[in-house]
View 1 (cartoon, helix red, strand yellow):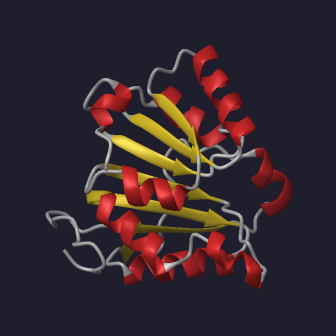
View 2 (cartoon, one colour; view 1 turned 180 degrees about the horizontal axis):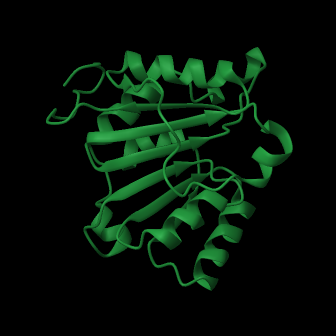
View 3 (spheres, one colour; view 1 turned 30 degrees about the vertical axis):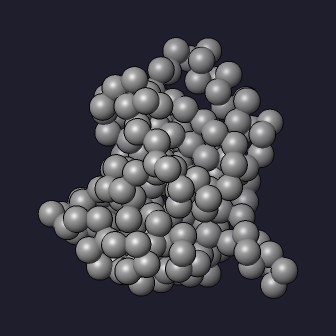
Length: 193
């Protein structure tokens, strides 16, 4: 059953979700600059969740919540329809081996859940040092009814993470996909609303 964001944050401000925040660099930077927006992060590594939560508390950021779990399951079951103004998916693990297929985010089911929970006019930001990861996830999201923005640029104020400096350098690939304004939530299992 979906959870009301007002119950999570205690207010009705817009919500952005980061999937796989790693050390939380982007999440905490956005939350610090944009106090009128709530930021919810889903990280599968429990230790990283505790670290990010502690850093958010130390910085006095009441607009941050972090949960440990499988993003595919959390988005599918707990995120309300048309309730997220933006998703941030930066440098997701590619899970390259065939036996890892079930862990990949680039799958039609996850894309449908993201499209269903994204508010009209909302955006999904995807970046990786691997163009194949951005392409695969972008194709799945487009198949779920989101529209890619050609020539899209990074969200304002997005910091370069230590991972990005170390591994990606100038080889970062980025895509932004949006949900059309004025469209209702797509019905479960469909691409269009």
